[in-house]
Image (spheres, rainbow, N blue to C red):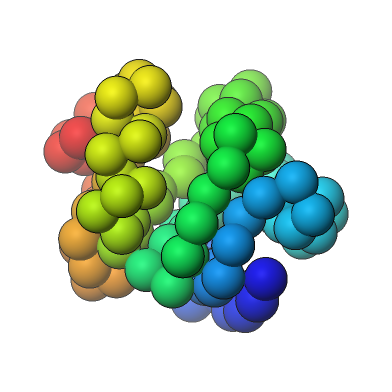
Length: 118
């Protein structure tokens, strides 16, 4: 699991790579949850994620709930087709804004939540 972090225009950007499973999920949690604050904006670049188990889905849901409780926003970018399909079938995509490109994700975070596409 590789996690690269940067911040641009008030948006925490995390690029995730490799497998998100029972072994790596705690690392993802320890890295991302401290970013949650009032009105935070987090962009997760998932384009380099090769596999995500139910442990990975749980971490994303936990992150979503923490962010929602703090009136923040999280967007997912570049979901690989298999992960998109899994998240769609299980209903997880109902919780997230998902975009194809980093530019689309950043633009969405710069708009008001009501205007964001899902």
